[in-house]
Structure formats: structure tokens, C-alpha cells
Length: 306
Ligand code: SIN
Image 1 (cartoon, protein in one colour):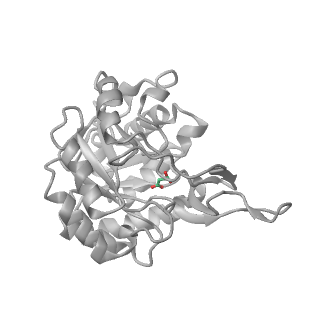
Image 2 (tube, protein in one colour):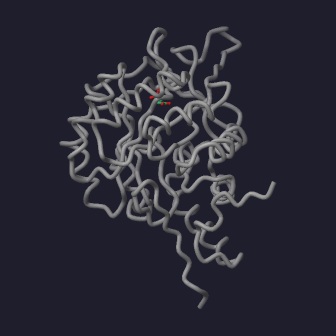
């Protein structure tokens, strides 16, 4: 028998049994995936983004398949923070997986209100703050594309929680490192990136946009090289743990992100193709470690040779 391999990682005080989480918006509130996946295997479930009140989201159609990816314009549909706490969290607490509450608001006050409600709730291990949704109506504050707004909203939220605070960044910016630094200066404990890339698809028969919202967020393997580049840049720029997201389909993809500087990864769009893909990715990472004489996964983090 070979040496025992440690896959556990620590993100801002959240102890994860392995570096593979599932991304917000691709795994519902966990319960939906129980017929297909053993939730105990996944290190953390990042639940669909929560707001202070329930939201219906954008009108359909709001999903379009693209070459090597998909566009979504869900529009932040969710059941609201109180229903999550009362109806979904008790179920999730039965599993040996960490629960990370992804959340957002239309204003700084709303972000703070959500956080005040979850801060002392048993069973929530961390918060992921979405400042990066591309599917908002015009006129909404785009916190994640402006460093001053990023600083203001993250600082405000920071005052209301002692839970580990992960800030999820948008790729729809000129220099993602400036936004990452603003989030770090404001008290973020970790950075996750990237959210989806703003995109569009047109039906050539009707000449109409395929999404009712006209534009949506692109995810899937087509965005992986962009995400990897941004993870690498941010890992060099801030001294916070990084969670890599963007088109991770295989264990090789996950390892690329970790070698670029991510301490953990989130699997997103791949869940729609294979609900059990996370388990395969975890086993693949373990085999890679075994074959390459790596006894601790943390040793590969940021090990890219330039
Ligand atoms: C959505 O619900 O529109 C997607 C959320 C996001 O991309 O942040």
C-alpha cells in the first residue's frame, strides 16, 4: 500500500476534506442532487445565491447551449434567505459536507441584511458574496466591476459577520487584480473566481436574441483558459486563499487551477452533464498525487513553473 495522501485544504478557516466544491447555481440547494450524488463526498456545497426576499428571476428562455459551454440569464432566482434557513438547511446539515451560503443584494444595505440573518445560524460554514452577476437589469449597481464599490460593499458586510467571507469576482473587467485587491483590503478572507463571462446568442431564423434577457453569462469549458489566467494573476496579487472556478470538467482541469495558485476549486457547468463529476475529479486528483509522489495536495498549490 502507498503512503496516505492528504487531500484536505483549509480555506480561511473552513476545513475541507478535499479541494473540490460545487459552484453556486449549478447544484440547487443540494437536495436536488441526492438521487445522483453522495453529498458526503463533496467537500462543500455552495448553494444558489440567496437574497433577502425570494426572487422569480428573469423570464424564459434563460438557458442556451453554446460551443463548449452555455449561456444563462437566470436572474438570481432563489427562495430567499429565511426559507433557505428554515426549509433547506436542516436537510443539508445531515450530511458531512460544508455549507457555503452564496448571497447578494441590490444595495449595500441588502447585502448586510442577508448577512445579519445568517451570521449566527448553525450549519452555515462560510459565506460567498456574489458581486459579479452579469444578469442584472440596467441601473443596478455593478459592485464587482468597480474597485471603490467593491471596497464599500465588502467592508460593510465584513462588519456584520465573523463567518469566513469569500468574495466571488467577475471576469467582466479590464484588470481583475484591482478588484481582488479592493476586496482583500476590505476584509475578505478568500477570493473565488471567475463568475460567468457576459455573452449573447442570436437565432438566425428569427434574428432575435436566444435569451429573453438578450445577454447572459457564459460558462463551461470555453471559459477555462480565461479563468485560469485570472486565477494565476490574482494568486500573485493578493495574499488570500483563492478558489478557482471556470469550465472545470476533469481532474486535469482542477489540477491546472491549483498549480496556477488556487487552494480549492468549484465545479459548475459540468454538474449539468454529469451530476457525479465531482467524485470523479476527487478520485482523479488522488490518483495524480499517488502517481507523482505527492503526499499533500497543498504542495501543488501555486507550483506553476514560469
Ligand atoms: C443568475 O442567477 O443569473 C446567475 C448568477 C450569477 O451568475 O451570478
